[in-house]
Structure formats: C-alpha cells, structure tokens
Amino acid sequence: MIAPANVVIGISSDVSKDGTACSPQSAAIADKVLEIYERGWAQNVLLTGGHHLRSWNAVTEARAMADRIGHLLPNDRLQVEWVAKNTRKNAEYSLVFMRRNNWDSVIIVAHPIHALRVQKTFKKLWKKQGIWKIRVVSAPSPYGGGSQRRWQNFYSFLIWDRLIAMPLFKLRGWI
Image 1 (cartoon, rainbow, N blue to C red):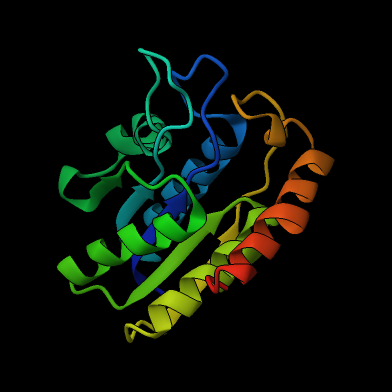
Image 2 (image 1 turned 120 degrees about the horizontal axis):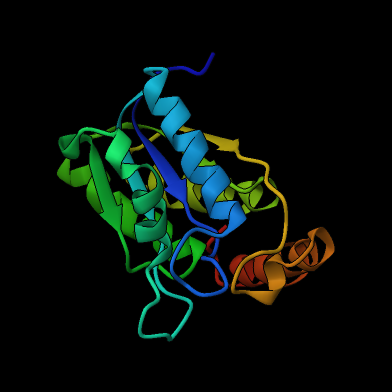
C-alpha cells in the first residue's frame, strides 16, 4: 500500500526506435502510473518528458506514454509536460504543475536505476519550495527496444547513470 497523493508523475525513459511509441522502459512506467491511479493512490496523473529524436514523426516521451494510457483516464485527470529533456528539467517543469494545481503530495514513477537520481533531484529542488511529501517508486522493465544507446542493456544504462549523470548532477548542485 502506498500513501495517497495528489498526483502520480511518470518520468519517461525514451521512445521506440522509430520514435512513434513508448520504449519498453517508458511503457513500464506508464503502466505503473496507471496502476497507481486506478488503485486510488493518486487523484491526478502528470507525464513528463521531451524529444530525443529529430525525426518528423517522433513523439515526445510524455506524449508516447499519454498515447499508451490516456484513453483509460478521465480527461480532467491527465496532464502532459512535453518539454523536459533531463531529470532536472522534469523536476523544474513538474513543479510548475504542482503549484498551478495546488498539489503538495506526489508519487513519482521512474526506472529502477534512474529512481535514485530522480529522488535526489526532485527532493533537493522541491523541498526548497515547501513540497515535502515525495515518494519515488520504480517500474522495472526489459532493456533495449528504444532510440537511445544508453538504454540498450543494464550495464550501459548503469554506467550512464552512475558514472556520468550522477556526478554531473552533483557538480551542478542539482543533487
């Protein structure tokens, strides 16, 4: 059982190779977001993530997740943030939605390896803004099937997240 929250936020993780749908990782995140909403643990859904492909037919990561689960949600309960291209921007742009809707509690769904960086990034930024009720849960998924090389297998993403992204976020003061 998860303590209820105003909103569940899905932090996207790539799109399919052709850019028209969720990667397996984003699909698992979207499915977990829907499960949390359907169980009544969150009253609203926010999906966040921008473009990584420069293709004419590519959708944003958040739009791909919305296409996967949006038809199962009431229109007034789903919001989509499609600009953020990194975890820090996910936190910044999601904060705008938190303020606009007077939400003060959140469940964030992320890929298991990414979840630690998500938690550190969101908590550091949001606690300064008075949002303390933050819980991060993970959505396990298979690797591969996406457009970014770092998502091709466990080791490539682990190296990317722990040896590149985490130190970079630390140097910038984001975590």
